Amino acid sequence: MANQNQEFVHIDDRTAADMRRKGFDPHEMEQSTQMILYYLYTSLPAPPVSAASRLSALRAPSDVVDRISQLPFALLRDIVSRLPVKDAMRTAAISRRWRPVWRCSPLVFADAHLIPGAIEGRRQPVRADTPGLVPAVTRVLAAHPGPFRSVHLVCGYMDAHQRQLARWIQTLIDKGVSELVLVNRPWPLEVPLPAALFGISTLTRLYLGIWKFPDTSGLRRGAGAEATFPHLRDLVLSAVLIENRDLDFVLAGSPALETLGIQGNKNGVRLRLVGQHIRCVQICMCYVESIAVVDTPNLERLLVWGSMTRGGSCIRVKIGNAPKLSLLGYLEPGIHMLEIRNTVITAGVRASPSTMAPSVKILGLHVRFGVRNDVKMLPIFLKCFPNVETLHIMSAKTDEVTGKLNLKFWQEVGHIESIRSCIKAMTFREFQGVRSEVAFLKFVFQSAQALKKAVIVSAKGSFTSIGEAISKVRSLTPDNWASNCSVFVYEGSGPEGGGLWNFRKGCDFSVSDPFAYH
Image (cartoon, rainbow, N blue to C red; front, side, top):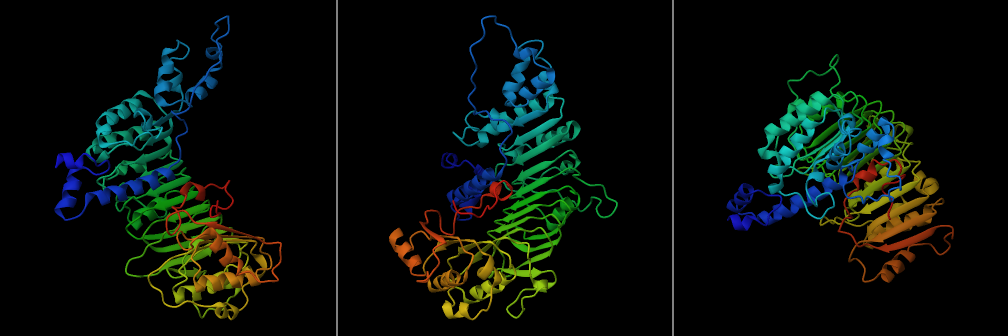
């Protein structure tokens, strides 16, 4: 049995044996865990320093004078704070002038720098690395007096090292840390985070991956309670087992929060957003019960991707006070029950100012064009966002084909302001060429007077060639169509349903449209 399990990187012997005993193939769990970790790691911020950079130096001058050591002490501290921890510690051996520099510099530390090949991506951390990694991390944290500017601990299998983890958290409390990225390598998934985490009041960025979140039921909350994380601006929870009451506790205790990300939540997210500084919220690949934007005067982006439900229930998405919300998606008409202010958007609701979100300029919709009721909700959703300038449509394949609507349906839906007068750019991904898709695109091409650019990406395998896809799209444009709109047709090459959502791009405000096709 031991030899059989040597091939596993993410699954321990006990888990693999338990899977086989229950009649499951542990290789499938290995593959799914690898995918989860890949997505998680691509979502993490890069460490502020890199161990993979190549260093170079000019030839030493003939007078052999050490001019670098003569630089001001503050500049030496800045230099050392940009080095990987091993190199930074070694600077103490250069000369007496350098000896105190590392201890006086805010520490930047990534445990991946301690595993040969890990930071360069040549290999993944494995369970056998952890027994040596844990004491090395302990030594580094103990050797530096603090404060810590950035600490990334993402390579350890921590199920057997929870006592050491608790010591690390206490050290960070005592010495102070600004950015903390803390990931547990599975399995198991339910390794508990120490409740002492709430004592790190200096945090400005917190990324947690694959933990069981501490129970907050015994902690003080409500009016008069001190903020748990008074300076926290960025919070990301990836594959973290967290109850909704505990999520509410953290959000209520983070008054400075600007960005929130939740990935891979299996419990069923019930999110209530209230915050004066929140700018971006991303909910990806989660079981979701409801998302209520209650009072967020500075919210600019709400990104929901890969929502899942249990028992076929709908997900309530309420847009309340969010006057700056400019980017919203991907809403799914068949899954998301949209509510604007206090009105649930249904087929019988007439468009009015109270049922509209006029601030939204970029809208993403995920539509099952083979499901009749989903397509019927599409124009109703579009009427709620009259000022959309960029529309992104993702067509979803489904086994639940219940009827395909033709062009006559769209001609009878009435005036859609955003389609007629506002939309300047549109992307349509996973185009399969089915009747409901064709009818929608014909309607857009006939109605959109401001459209300047349209990008159509075919679903992989839906057409025999890119030429066939181009011919199909060309047949949808009217003969007298204005020539000032450019139409681009691409052949899809990614996985069915599109690639994974780019979490970093979603919260990067230098990227004006994270939904854009590249």
